[in-house]
Structure formats: structure tokens, C-alpha cells
Image 1 (cartoon, helix red, strand yellow):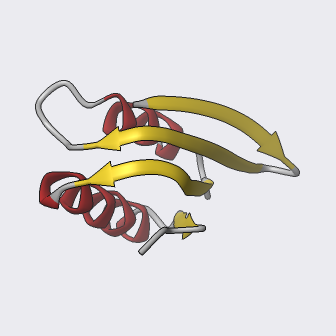
Image 2 (cartoon, helix red, strand yellow):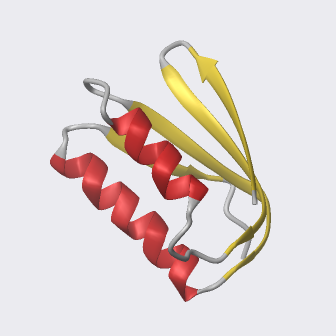
Image 3 (cartoon, helix red, strand yellow):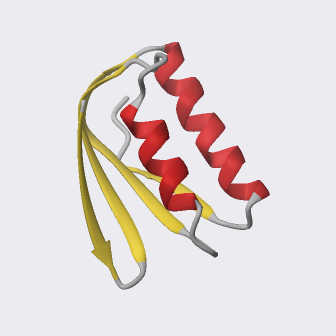
Length: 82
């Protein structure tokens, strides 16, 4: 998995690529958790270049959105592929 981070007017855009398969050593979860430490964090996960996602990867996305909601932050999913 690749993660490129850009800042667009206070919104962190994470462009993801490759395979999103979850697991114990998960750079995506670690990166988003660190970004959520900021107050009122706004994060967009751009999924257009994700070639494969399994149930563990989907679970990570759901968990990150839920974690953001608890912290009064926002994580949105952009450009998901079917």
C-alpha cells in the first residue's frame, strides 16, 4: 500500500494505492490515528488507486470513520471503486 498525503485548505487528503488488506502492521490506521490527534481533524481518503480490498481493509475504514466521529473529526471516503 502507498499513502501520499497532501494538505488542501486544512483537509488532509490521503491518496491510497495498491492493496488495502488490513493486518497488524497497518500504515493506514497508524497514519490516520496520528492525524486524528489534531483538533477537528478533517481527512479524505482517496481510494481511486486501491486495486484490491479485503474484509480486513474494509473493517479498518469503518473503524477509522467511527473513531473520527467519536473525536468530533471527519474521515470521508472519496472515489471508491466497485
